[in-house]
Length: 288
Ligand code: GRG
Image (cartoon, helix red, strand yellow):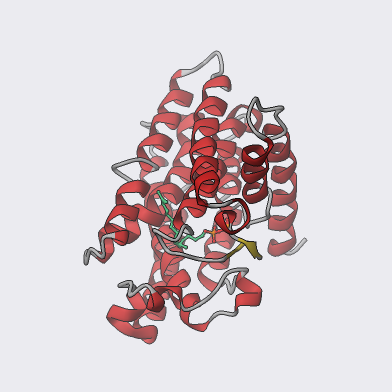
C-alpha cells in the first residue's frame, strides 16, 4: 500500500472514533451540536492523531488506551481552526473545502463550538485515564500545556497582534501541537524519561516548523481546490511569514533542511520509524 493510501486508511479509521466521540447526545441546542460536528467531521488530514497513534504503536504501547489523547488533539486542533477563521482573527470563508463554521452558524455559535470542543477534549482525556495512570497523565499535561497560553494560544495571540518574532509564532502557533502529538504517544507509552524522547522532540520540532513553512508557501503557490481554503490569506492580513521575510526560494531551502533534520533525528531511534519518516516527507512535500 502506498504511503498516501496508508495515511488515508488511518484517517478513515480515526474518523469513525471521532464520530462516535461526538455522537452525543448533548444536552444543548441543536445548533451548537451541529456546529461542533460540522467542523470536526468535515474531513482534514488527521495528521496529529495519526502521529500520536503511530508513535504509540512503534514503542509497543496500547493504542486503545492512548486514543482519548488522539481524539483530544484533533478536537483542540479543530477548535483552533474554527476560532482562527473568525472575522476578528484571520477572517476566512472556506475551510476543509466547506464554508467556515461562522459562515454557516454565525459568529457566536462558532465561538461556542470552539469552546465546546476544547472542553470535550478535557472530558475525553479525563474519562480515558487508565489504571497505570502516571505516564498517561504526564502525556495529558504535555498536551494541555502545548495547546494553552504557553503554546498554541500564545502563538496565535502574537500572530493576531502582528508581532514580529516569527520563530516564536511558528513554534507556538503550529509547532507546539504537532510536537505534543508526537510526545503524547511516546510519553504515555515509555514515560517522560525515556532516551527516545529527545530525538522524537527534535523530529517533531523540525516537522512542526516545516509544516508551517509549507503552509506559507501554499498560501502563495497552492490552489484553493486542493487546499480546501482560500489562498492569499497571509498577504490579505498583512502577516509576516517565512515567505514575506525571506522569499520563496529561501523558505523552500529551509524546508529541505528541516526534512533532513527530521530524518537524522529518527536515525538515532532504534525502533521502526519508517512511517514517521514517510510522514515527514509527506508534510514537507505536500500540496494540500
Ligand atoms: C485560535 C487559539 C487559536 C489558535 C489558532 C490553527 C491555528 C492556531 C492557526 C491556523 C493558522 C494556520 C492555517 C496555520 C498553519 C498550520 C495549520 C495549523 C494548518 C492547518 O492544519 P492542517 O493542514 O489542517 O493539519 P486539516 O484541515 O488537514 O486538519
